[in-house]
Image (cartoon, rainbow, N blue to C red; front, side, top):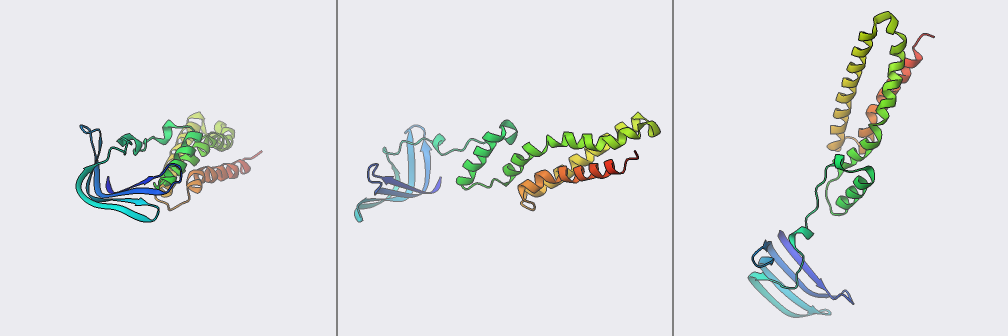
Length: 191
């Protein structure tokens, strides 16, 4: 770690008892402790500094947190359901991490299943024209529409990932665009 500051508080009064500041700290596995480099220790009692000293290298036995305590578990959005992903996003946001990509994935968990309904809506007008063009033409058009949806969805998702679009808009735009196209095609069908 770099630029390390450790604040030791009294557990009953929550007043500062000691502050350790160091340029660097690393875990010493043989020592089973943190090794602080180029820093200082200041002990306080109330508002009075009782002791101050500088050090080049130092360990502090009172610090019991091991490296795993400071690590965040990295998870893929596809490995979590929407509740876990929402909690994970909030946890990372509170820790100061950028969560834009995960926010887009959170909204995609809701928007992607809607595409099945939109494909059905788009397919209805083509179902009425099968007799004129043949079944193979209908299948080819369906595959083409799915490819265009996938490309459009990927483009808008990437725009959301770089904060060009808000996450909900990036996730839901393909559904809205293709849903409107499906309604338009459905209204144009001869009855």
